[in-house]
Length: 412
Image (cartoon, one colour):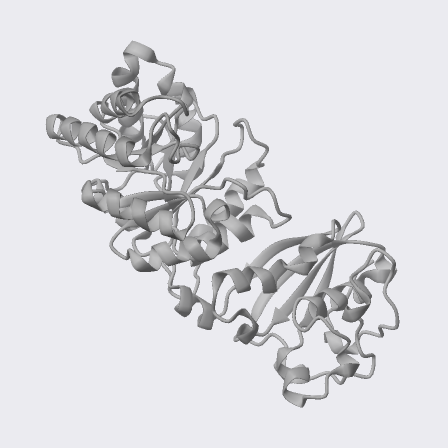
């Protein structure tokens, strides 16, 4: 059933279905519409994908708008400003088939407090508890993009760090958990001697007893520095910083003392507020965001990884590429990459970092898809090369450097 666009306030809501939001979110059917404020560019836009009967969608959409803004019956709101400026509004509803609908909801920026945790709460806090609602897309207004500022370096900055131009970047990962600092440094040395652009800790490396951060990072940084002195290529090492905010700050200081200027952080593991704090406190350091725990919510990857991680300062965004050991589709990967580069209030683009079981044999295919706008992350396939790791890393680097990006084919 096609659902036409109309003001949320005109929806005739009298009751909510049993599987809907709480009764506190029931709307006032007599609330007057204010058409002049619809599609307000100063509002935060959340597009929710809702699974329900067509006969219920208007009620459900309005309930979400109220739940995610004031969380109370609108008839009980006596303050005119709150009623007209703070209460969420449904701007339109689209039937996308299969009993699913997309509801476009406009939310007041002031409710976010211009703070990452509260932004996520306003976007999907209570609604995330419902198993038939997904946060599909986000549109951030200028007030939020100005406040969060986005990537400090972005794609161009990550390439400039390693002297790359007109090509994709290369990256590998140090693993497994359980190796000593010396063993991890040995792996890093081989990968750096193969000429890779970036070498990151596996996101599972934290401050474990087998390789404490304060021992692991200096050892790996020294090994990479020695290798780059021999190769002449400025390979960057990214330590994984983890823990609470105090621990994150201590680890960043250690990384700085080792001469490092690029970090790996999993925003959903450390928390969005802590992630953004580290970004703001270290404006001279590039940050690559890891997607660990990004699948624990019903927030679409394009919204969380492509939009929120970028807005909060991720210079690069790692995500599972199609055809790997995770389930992202071609369409999802294309949408994330597009969101990372889409106009967003003047923010720099984030660099897509497709990963998750990628192999050397797939390099031409991956580059044909992303062209030069990506950092290819290949971990296990390189680490499995054993004594040939340096040669295989070098082959990886050459394959990326020699690819014909204009034609989208591998060099002969």
